[in-house]
Image (cartoon, rainbow, N blue to C red; front, side):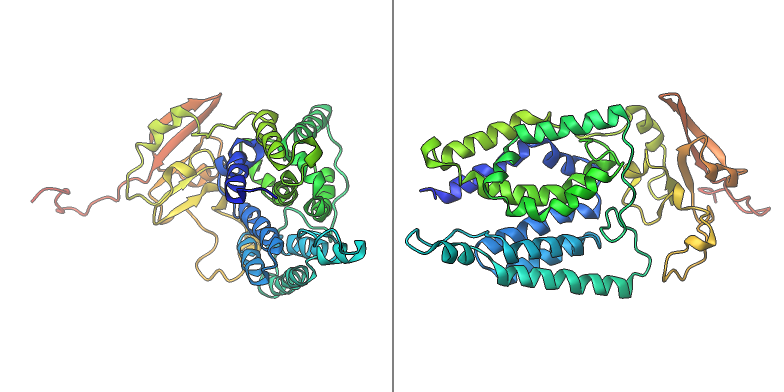
Length: 362
C-alpha cells in the first residue's frame, strides 16, 4: 500500500529498537523462550505471502526455544484458519469472497498441525514438563498487591499509547494471542519488568502483538493521511511509551572477585556472578549442587548429586547453603554488596609427597 514498501518495512522494523519491551528481551539474560518472538512473528509474516514452507520453518525456530511453542503455534494456526490475514482481493469482488480469500487456512492448518504434532513428541521425549504457561492446568488467579496491580495498569496504559495499539487495525495476531493474554493476566509473576530475569516474559506476547501492529501500520486510514502517517505514529508511540532499559552489568564491586578466579578453573557460581565466568569447560550454578535424588534429570548417567568434587573455585554469597560442603576450602577474597557478602573460595592445594620438588623448581 506504499510506493516504497521496502523502505517502509525497514523503518517500521528499526523502530522496534525504540520499544521498551522489545529491547528488554535483548538486554535481559538469555532464555530460550525469546526464540518465540522471531519464530511466531516469522510464521505470521510468511502467512502474509502465502508461504507455507517458510511458516513451518519459522515454527521450528519457535519450537527450538521451549515446549510452550506448541501452544503458541496452535493458537496462531487456529486464528489463521478462521480470521483474515492477507490483503483482500480487489473491491469489485463480493464481500464473502473478499473475506474468505484473506484467510490463510492452508498456512494456518499447517501451523496448527505442527503445534499438535510437536506437543505429542514433547510428551514422548520429555515426560517431565515445566511450563511457564500451560492452558491445560490454569493456576488459581493470583491475588495482586496494590503495587503489583498498579504496575500492570501502568504497563497496559503504556501499551495503549505505544505503536502496538495500531494492531487493532489488523487484529488477527491480537486475537490469536488472547489465550496467552488471559493466562498472563491471571499469573502472579512480575512480567511487567523491563530489566532483570523476568524480562524474557515479553517475548511470547510481543510475537502476537507485533504481528498485528506491523500490518496495522500500513492500514492507517487514507482519509487520515495513509500508511506513512501510520508509520510516523508507530515510531513516535514506540519511542515515547516506555523508557529504554539499559544493559545491566551487575554490581561493579563483584568484578574484583571475578577477576581473581583462575582462568582455567572449574567453577561454581551463583546467579549474581555466573554470567561473568561463562565460557569455561566446567561451570555449575551453585543451586544445581547437592540436589536430592528425586530431582535427578531424565537420562543423567553421571554420578548424582553434583558435588564440589572436581571444582576449583566457588563464587557465591556467604549465606549459600553450598558453603556447608566447602569445609577446608580457602577464602581468597570477600566483597560486601548491598548488605550481602560475596566470597570467592578456592580448593586447597593437595599436599605434596615428601621429597617432591615444589612446582617450578628442579
